[in-house]
Figure: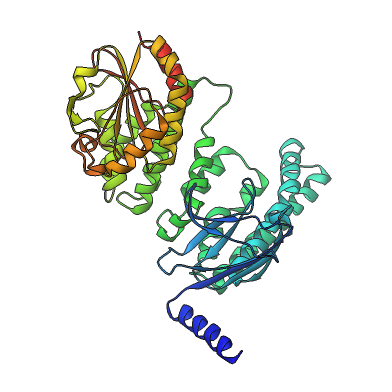
Length: 447
């Protein structure tokens, strides 16, 4: 028994010496479900690890010292999650699987205690604040209830902003202070009249230089909120695009050029407008703001290059590759009409899903006169051949087994898999579908 205690103590000392912080929790009623711990980078969450509950619905996890300090998301179920500040101190909590957010009890650390205490204040005040703001906006200034409503709003303002002021006084450099301050610090005028002009001013006057907040959703939430201030549901798409151009120009006027936050904002907006097929906005950003990035390397550089070269109407370049047996093949020799050029890899889960979806609609593609040219970015022949033997794809697959170092990947400035280009018989790009629905829609428009 003494030897076991010595071993446990030694492990604890070793983990402390290597800078690992403990993350532990108890989730009542979880029925031994596995949890997903995800790293935050803006709106994106990347799965870091799977956490396993024991028979008492508890888990213990040691955060890798190389992991960035910041906000992390813990998925309790597919649709329910909690967020924690990790990397600074040991974290412990207790909650229920049925209502994890509503029932959470943070035992430690102090940053997470402050985080959830403030979020509860915000949630409690939110419904009352909305009703009172509407009352203040609609009723005459001389009404007795107007004074009471304003006083109630001012009391909520003092409660919320007083909490933030105390945090700034006690822990000015702490992550939770900077995070909450960025998202929730507001002038009193905002509480009395939450109009668009004031909201735009609030967002534009924030500190957009704090790189620590890149490991959170602070910047992405603010960017979305700012764009929404320029959106009008009653206006058409053309007007919406014009409004968003104004918003984009404003955003890049208050985020400092050449900063990591500037790079993040550009990439985040590019990805967002890509999802909604707003190529005009993408080209507007690339034309006016891409050259002001601090370091356009890797993914951002390739994405910018991809859109500069491969916009709709551009020519898809010819290339020489090899089939899976090593025999040379030339792209243009296989373009006789409408062609879907697909870049993918077996190590990409989304690519495998895409291949199965393409296989299901392949008869429909054939009927529409669309051929598929499929180029794999695999670098291990055995992986590709094993997959193809199981997938039974009805179209040929090419691969030079050079992965991302493939000359074809460089020629097409590939930054992600899967990537699809729909071209016509003149080798002109007609569309860049992101999913099957977009692909089917685009096929109908190509003559």
